[in-house]
Length: 301
Image 1 (cartoon, rainbow, N blue to C red):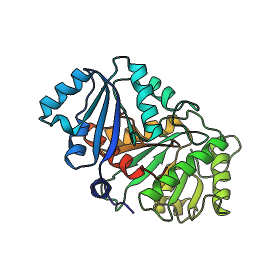
Image 2 (image 1 turned 180 degrees about the horizontal axis):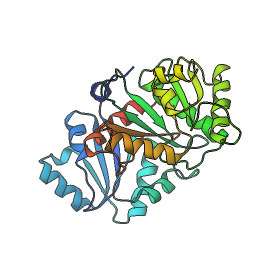
Image 3 (image 1 turned 90 degrees about the vertical axis):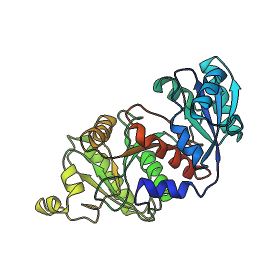
Image 4 (image 1 turned 30 degrees about the vertical axis):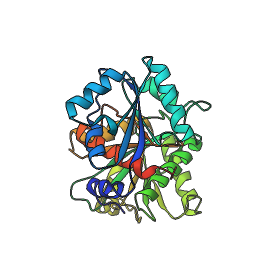
């Protein structure tokens, strides 16, 4: 299993340069994330949008023009549509968001006919490199699905298990979180967690250990779980945390980053090609890791 973001970068460097399509690009687009990825031979960027803006960035970074392809398309919507089509057809291998708001970008990428949506739903996995922990950990869904149904949670679970496999987790331990550790019909997320737990018990998710419902203290502390009479292989050893809804997921991710000072990168799952989202709540110093994750996901979605 991957022990750190540094190990993820080292593994990504063994995969060869992938064709990464950025769109739409304008004078406001921050392309700095690409610099280290290009220096390490991870990507060959294809920039769709304002060619002058891309050329100016090349000059500032002192990058030879031969190390990047520019496709001129001043209309942002058309630039993104072209980029998605390129990735779908294999001309590009990774899609990266340029200067377009996340909502509009998601609408295009997750369009069932013209976009990249592959599964019942897409979901965002936040990958953490927590200090003092001997492996990376994951939480989902932290951005896409506001109040997922149990059917959608099944797909969200399958999505994160796929990413865990790419990161070397052969038998991941998964905590399905809720407000309490007991099944209570008055709290629907405890019912969903119990269903997911039973499905995992019957190996419907493959070789995983999934327990739920668990509240956060039982999930992260075996001592707390023992005090509450909860005995599980997951308590205190979770690799993946399934969030009850996006409110809990997004807040947990942001609290981990801004208060816990935990490095975080994100991966969009449930799509047919890797997508680098460049979301504003991901620390700038960790956005290169999102490219690393996309490189590792090439051909494995």
